[in-house]
Length: 144
Image (cartoon, rainbow, N blue to C red):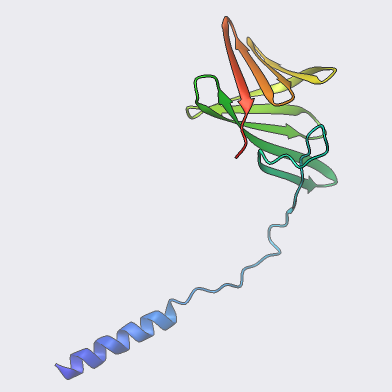
């Protein structure tokens, strides 16, 4: 009985020692320069509704992504991601596990219009006006 307890304890100790995970990783395999950016509103104050904003530089080209949460008039929450890179600017709208990505079509003053097929998104300030056919959805940026 004592021999089996000693043997079991020895096995447990050896297992615990041999299963120690290494915290040293090969960090030179994947390099990415990601920095936090601060989004300010029209008054120069920090906009607290930003979920996440990042700028990534790859081969000298910067890509900026900003995530927001918008709320529809029916109370449902929608994730909206604005992406700006040297090639194009897009908005990705995710709701009910479906994502619609619309490229930037034009800018009129302080309003930006994104369009693809029959879907149009008009962004002005904290509001996003989404149109698809005869359906119109009003979204307002929420504070998290």
